[in-house]
Image (tube, rainbow, N blue to C red; front, top):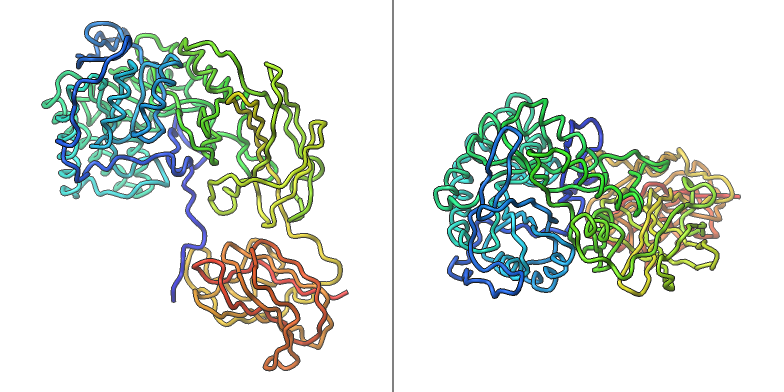
Amino acid sequence: MLTRKETSQSTSRSRRGRPVAVVGAVLALLGGVFTVANQTASASPGDASTAEAAGSDVGLTAASVVEVTGGDGSWQLTVDGEPYVVEGLTWGPPAEQAAEYMPDLASMGANTTRTWGTDATSLPLLDAAAENGIRVIAGFWLQPGGGPGSGGCVDYVNDYDYKGEQLAAMNTWVEEYRDHPAVLMWSVGNESVLGLQNCYEGEELEAQRVAYTEFVNDAALEIKALDPNHPVTSTDAWVGAWEYYEANSPDLDLFQVNSYDAVCDIQQAWIDGGYDRPYILTEGGPAGEWEVDDDVNGIPEEPTDVAKAEGYKQAWDCLMAHEGVALGGTLFHYGLEEDFGGVWFNLLPGGEKRLSYYAVAEIFGGEAPTNTPPVITDLAVGGDRTAVPAGSEFELSASVSDPDGDAIEYEVLVNSKYIDEGGALEPAEFTDNGDGSFTVTAPNRPGPWKVYLAARDGQGNLGIDTTSVGVVPPPVDGTNVALGAETTASTFQEQGDGAPFLPEHATDGDNATRWASEWADPQWLQVDLGTSTAIDTVQLFWETSYARAYEVQVSEDGESWTSIHTVTDGAGGVETAEVNGSGRYVRVLGTERGTGWGYSLYEFGVYTS
């Protein structure tokens, strides 16, 4: 029997019980933000000429010697003998668009950017960086990168083929780019010490972490043999990973860590660990999804735009307070995506600048803005936001002001991340009431929805804040005679996460359980009411696997059927229809699936007045 994974594994970080600075970059959270370079790319290094970048007044035109100097709490990063503090941002746009966006990064006062992968496609980014006076922490991706919930599993104890392939790829691109003026240092791997807990446990997990950090040290030695002029490091999302690097990666020149709300705890963790190397913050900013409390709908309470802007400043102040040890950082994230993760972390989703963009530019001493974004405060949903009927209207309100007096245009969007892991923000139907309130039509699909209010000033600036609503099936007058009735189906899925998906789950009154059919047409679900009953309303609450075409039918004997409701353009969610019919048996007959999966119903309600 064909099955699908019924409940997608969460790719966002676990938000409970992590150690200090446990989490960092949200590669999965940001969905498609990253295209990590394939380190075994087939492109020839000869295709990536390292011709000297075309210089400008601030351009970098020659390779530099970069060193970690000093010691015992008086470390420094130097470039050609001059002190260098890393003041940068992680890089999001495609490498081929670097020439378009790198000047903006430079205008923010940044001197560094960080990447996660290096191969033939990296040359346009390196060239654009050099032309704009930006240096690059050039990363090499290793599995399972991105922390728990993302990346593939590798056996670092025994998989010599994988390790050999990665060493060969790293050597190829280090040799190709070591003389490029933009290169600041090499970074081997991202969050894999933490991420290995998604693959192993117990003694095997410990063995894998040791083997991984030993492999990182092997990579460091090979890179240094090819390029003695740039430091080598590795990054993780957990300061607890440092003990593994300390023990097994003695040839790393410095540590790196990804941390958000816990940045201010790093200094004490470094002291408590007795470490002997300085560090760089390679991702940081406001609190992440895994670090905040849930709201009344069970959705992590995303910080406001105002709080996020302040979060960057607080993170930077705490980082740089560790004098002689913290050598700077690349904050997260110079990205353009305007999806769930992009709104949480990107400084310019959709290319529009927000308060956090200007806060980071202020930190780095960038150009003073001539115009700044609208400011949203006190975003709220009127009434009971835990029980908004699907397809009904609810009130959204906020205080919005523009510091420059610009006219503001509004948009309301919704996101289904906590229903189906969807990343997209979808426009909602709404009316601007002109008094700071908005009448919004709720989604037709029940579940916890994020709701966003976007405010644009026409000057390329964006204010955007978010709250949530719990969408529920609309109430239906009358008695649900299908509740608890004997229910059968043509098929049901016996395997999968949460299986078996039994027919009676669709009539148990529990919106958390469901029936799911095999992946074929047609399929049916049938309810035995026990006696002939007049019905006037049916309500179908579909899971993601909905019916595009179906009929609701009645029968007295369970063999001869009469259709009382036909749909040929079903859209899923909750569908409520008035009908006129009677019978002992009522069934929904699916004739065309709306997805590539089967049919799946949380609830099938049959009502009589």
